[in-house]
Image (cartoon, rainbow, N blue to C red; front, side):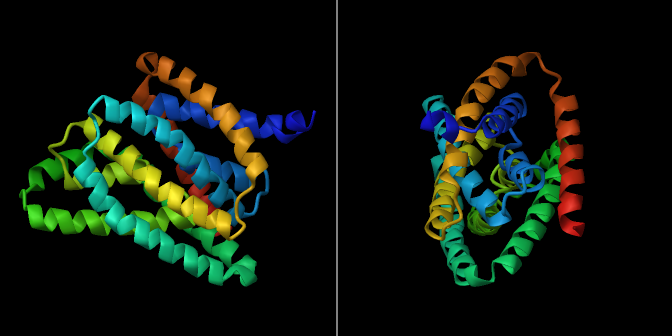
Amino acid sequence: MEFLELIKPVYAASGFGVGLIVGLTGVGGGSLMTPILVLLFGINPAVAVGTDLLFAAVTKTAGTAMRGFNGTVNWGVVMRLAAGSVPTALLTIALLSASKSNISQVAKLISITLGCALLLTSLSLFFHKAVHAFALAADTNNLRARGFLTVLTGAILGLFVTVSSVGAGALGVTALLLLYPRLRIAGIVGTDIAHAVPLTLVAGLGHAYAGFVDWEMLAALLLGSIPGIIIGSQLAPRAPELTLRILLACVLAAVGFKLVVS
């Protein structure tokens, strides 16, 4: 009976819905889960972000295992991204923990950062193909500059993801499209998912140490998301991907605007 009370149906249903969208479109995890927890359920933004980060770490570990087995992960790029993102995540966690006593300002900072990240994610979904075409035309194949920019990109993603839980998906893919336009799309997505695992795990454990994780809610979200992702993945080949991405981009833009101006 206690276990049934622990797994709250409303959180499991939310996990299922987000998992379904992620399975259909490949994006939308942190972009949707954290705003749902903050705006729909009134969860403290810091707790919503921390819980969602560990949620992402668990779900993307499974995705990384599958894509690594299929050979669609560029581990060299993952290491360069992580070299920038993991230290930045640790530093950001330390700063957030130091500001824990002033929780209202921390919550406001997270809400604004989350809103900005959602707006950027929305733009990346709208202009996905245009970004790729531009990157192909501008590619100079400067390996040294590309390596430095990859580490810098990781650092920027580390900041955004740690503060808002958003950015490891659509923003990461967009950045990789700009940096590595000649990689296959499957390799871009696989590399982005693999990089998200250490980043979200480190950031999520940092939030947990600071007391910003609701473990009961996390269990319920995972219980719902796993079947959602499986069903969405099965339906994806028959779904109108362009329509889904445009609808998702519009929703993220509206939610991001609300978070920024509220």
